[in-house]
Length: 102
Image (cartoon, rainbow, N blue to C red; front, side, top):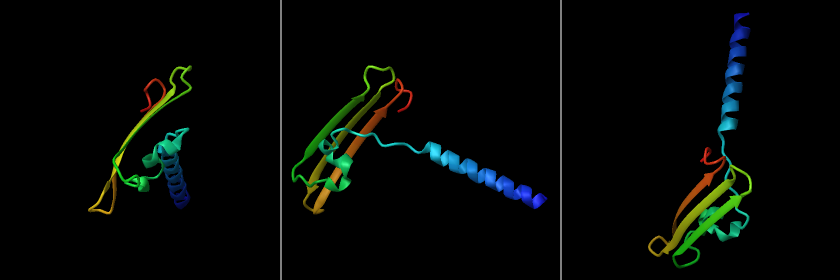
């Protein structure tokens, strides 16, 4: 009987852990014109343009309701000859629910 309760408690602990992992995951913001932000689309595009590139994106989804989703993104990338590749910096801010979820 004691062995059954131990397995039951392990099952409950596993279920709680799975629930916490499922709830704590986040979603990536989606841009309607995703091709306009190549570093967000695929980081391997860093330096592919050959010259320094700045990108700024802003999305205001459902602006007529309170607590709309507002997403801002800024990225910079450039080709580095000594690396034979590119480097990039990307900053993304996603706000929802009157900035309660950020």
